[in-house]
Length: 124
Image (tube, rainbow, N blue to C red):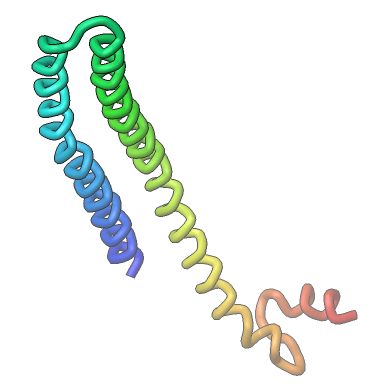
């Protein structure tokens, strides 16, 4: 069961990475069109209009770079978090297993087993 959960975490991680990367990549042709059209427009502008168009082109480039950098940073955080999530799941499963094993002993009217002395101490 543990390997299945690890596999699911790995698959979800990979899918999320792939979907986000494809989403950002799908925006690149739009950015390229904006740049080409903006440069073409610059040829027909002068003065303040030229400056405004260039600002818009630069802003579009900056936003795309920023988006790409944020995606890279987020994916790096996901990569770092995946082993922690796996470790958490392993530890959680161990705790649940231990609780299932020890619960009958704790519920018994007269404790038995290796923890009997400690149970008696805790009850008194």
